[in-house]
Amino acid sequence: MNFYINQTIQINNLRVDSVSNSSVLQIGSAGMIRSMSNLYNTGGFTEPAPEAVEPLDPVIPLVPLAPPAPPTPTLI
Image 1 (spheres, helix red, strand yellow):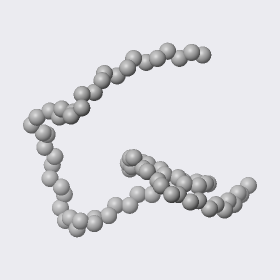
Image 2: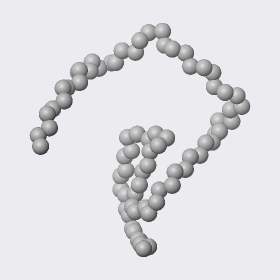
Image 3: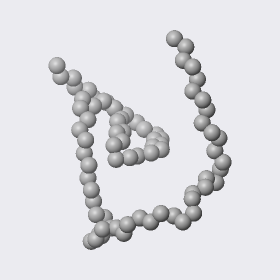
Image 4: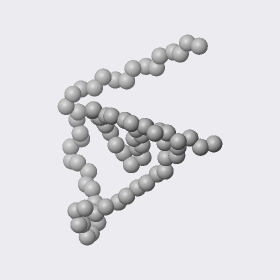
């Protein structure tokens, strides 16, 4: 069975907080989502990046964080 969907979508404001290599942003309908990955050398680099070094001082958050809350019981 084939569905043909015509849509008109108007987006006034779109905020994306995070994008990673496996993110999918879908607007509208899709019958099948195919993965696609493109790698571009836009900086014109010709050799590998240098190895990362560990920081000398441990990273301390600027805002103290509260400890995680205990799990709440689930009522069925």
